Image 1 (cartoon, rainbow, N blue to C red):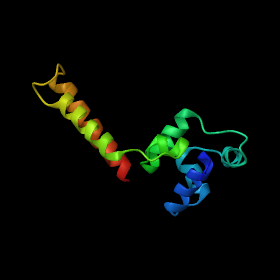
Image 2 (cartoon, rainbow, N blue to C red; image 1 turned 90 degrees about the horizontal axis):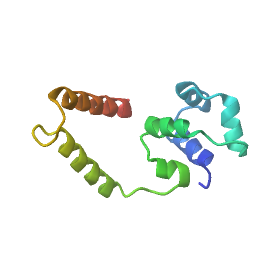
Image 3 (cartoon, rainbow, N blue to C red; image 1 turned 180 degrees about the vertical axis):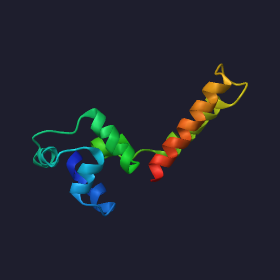
Image 4 (cartoon, rainbow, N blue to C red; image 1 turned 30 degrees about the horizontal axis):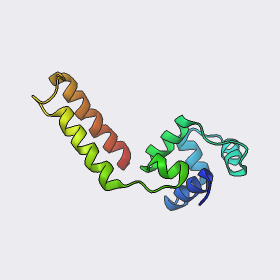
Length: 113
């Protein structure tokens, strides 16, 4: 898979959905998808982020086809989150910590739907 479109097409097929449903779910016109296929245009940065979140894949893979080093990223992410939301280890208020926890739970829910 050499192009962004080929990787998007792979994700669509892998999820066993139609291109039409994909376009409806992400608010993409079928004309834009066709332009991506023909190489006339590429998805905007915002759309790439939405696609990555929708399929729960890294932007590195989506944009350039490079597999991320998941263990390193996961470890750093967990350390960062734990350092940020543990009471007494940051300058965040309890309300801010609760908001961050709720946002993380929502993100996990959205990723798994």
